[in-house]
Image 1: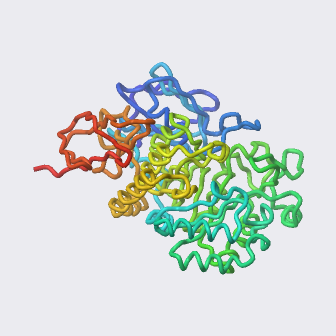
Image 2 (image 1 turned 60 degrees about the vertical axis):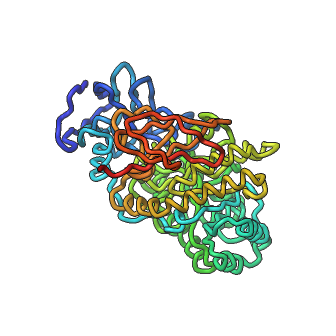
Image 3 (image 1 turned 45 degrees about the vertical axis):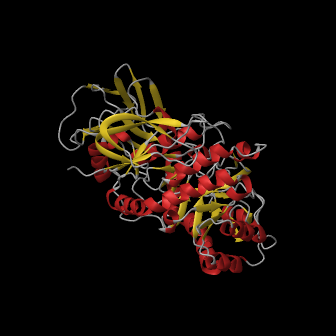
Length: 532
């Protein structure tokens, strides 16, 4: 079926049972599309070239090399105001001036005449905002993750030293995330007392220093553990198609997986987490894994579920805790969940730093406004750990992007890896963040009510700038153009119509593309001036 002129009016399109057939939409002149999966951000907006994605299956699904998940959702929105939605995952492809869709109950409609109108219509009808945001402290101060400094080796002593070193070096208090290996086994969510002899005292001390505390958890259960024997005996684990408990390889080895379609399995998990909150004073949790790749379509679960449903079920566990972080999510747009980009390598170029802004833009257009561009300097442990020395310029430019994102997260101690010049540039970035923090917090509140992205594509507020995806709007009136090129001393900034004042005080009449100097400490940005 080919549709060249969808019905007009707010999402007046119709549901179509495709049954393996394809629905084809003729692309309108200059129409660009956003949505689907955050990891495709560098390819957005879709429409000018060929691109294909199956939202129900990650690349290489079922193989050891399957791609990890980031955020995804069954929604596409266009710069001409059109919307595609389904309750279920669908496949889509752009080619030869057409958008081909294949799936169940796909709705096509029009929400207006612009990208913003399309997004707001989709948000109201399909991904309504909850009215809540994650905990304020996740935005008001930096986050400090132990992962890079102490991978797999956190102890009470090293966590306290990590936080103390940060604070004594002049970093502001924030949220401390204790990453993998604080517990004895996966699924046994109690502190390893050999490493953490008095976790309540540790958390009390961190609180006294002005920090909140989160713990890393996953939906896995170590096979050789008492927790496994209990969970298996109670039927709380996913079974494979033969009926045996499914033991799956993930990045830390082999584990069973909780069947989170079973309310008893959810309670088994949350009872442990709630006990940690009550007994130790921990504030919340980093919910890692839950990737679509970790599940199979023929898995046996308490309720019928596809891999995407199990990813969604993991995210729903986090709704219980205002201090939360997720990396993998399906169809949870509009919910009060912090969303981190997947672990990034310490690389210049599109595989690394150049992907941060496009992927955050994609997160927002799928309905996830509360975003974090991974750990500053990169969170991919193999890449970061393999460096003979930290690329200090890279670290600074990464910190500058994070400083003007909704959330910013450190995992390497800046004072340990940076010289005075580069450390000063990071502190300058923190000062810039402090100056715009009222704006960021206001946008967090707005996103909770309206669902609107905090980090927005240029096309969201300005037609004709669809191709500009290395800069962004922070709200409707601040254009941020971070530097992502190695050794750059200047960059081009695209500005929409209107009068704009740069961070250097220069006033520019738009529309314009201006070349601005960008020394190590500068984050180019322009604020819209009132008319008249």
